[in-house]
Length: 426
Image 1 (tube, helix red, strand yellow):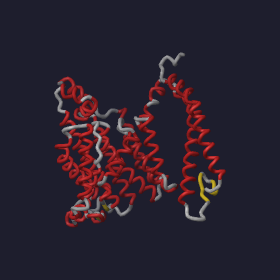
Image 2 (cartoon, rainbow, N blue to C red):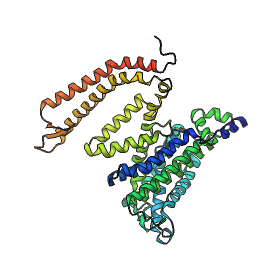
Image 3 (cartoon, helix red, strand yellow):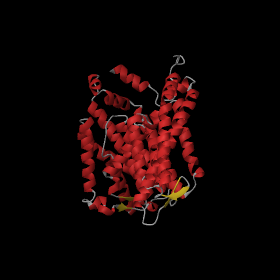
Image 4 (tube, rainbow, N blue to C red):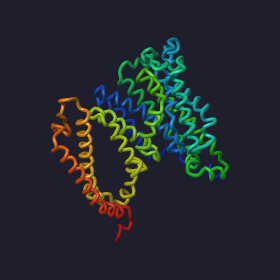
């Protein structure tokens, strides 16, 4: 056991190889408002940054510790409510720089995680998941009962501009809130990454994979889960504090099962097995929710279908799908996949979009107001009651999926060849 501990502590947490991505991420966050300068884009990026902190904190449980939580929004929500109450304490808030406020949310989230984790982390698996679900529903129910803290159905609001100016910045504009959120996103992500490289973080992986073996080596699986749970609660509170700063209001929605389920969906969609996976999941989900949500009322249906496809065919998520290509890239055979990919994915994408078009036509035909027959899909305006659009979408959808299926064996062969060091001789 001593040797294992020494090896864990001797492993460098940060090297030149993994420092570059952090520098590039910081540079991108700095110039992003210059590239996307509209107010709506900055608002979306603020939402993404807050959700990324939350998703990375959640992944400390799901991806690193193997603990499935159905009520993790509680720790973000409680931290956010605490920050809003601090905003309303005028005498205190006037002496507190706004960038410090997320620490308050983190500490409150951590204290709440200590209380809940003291009994919930005794077991893992289904027992832990059910306890987290019960705690989440209990706190969500209390949010409409304990009005003095949660504000009832209306929630609690505050005003971030009452805080003490930070080097002359009063955070009146969204761009100022964006850079504050970006700062805490980088700091939180870096601290969570470093935590994953500590002996406790390493042992969390061992407890996730084989708790009996970890116990045999002399480690307490319960305490390893507890430390990970408390650390996750702290960063969830940080996310809650950022949410309070950005939106200046907290409601029951920040605590309920829908929020916890949404963060689970984003984390799994991006890839819970990789540190950067939740980031991809958040970007994908928020873009689908905001951009696709402006185009169709059925955006949630498509997100659900994407999540289902991820679970069935790509359990490693989007990040796992990307990392699958590391071996072909190292072998210098990535170019052998270009043509097979085109043969499979081009008709598959066309067929899928056509299927979505058929669903949109069906939805419009059944729910449009009387006399509103015309609709626009893919920059084409037509009547949803005409038979020709129905036939075209069905034929293209079936044809595209059939062509993709016909080309799948060729892609399998190319994939095997690209991943074989000897060239995949047949």
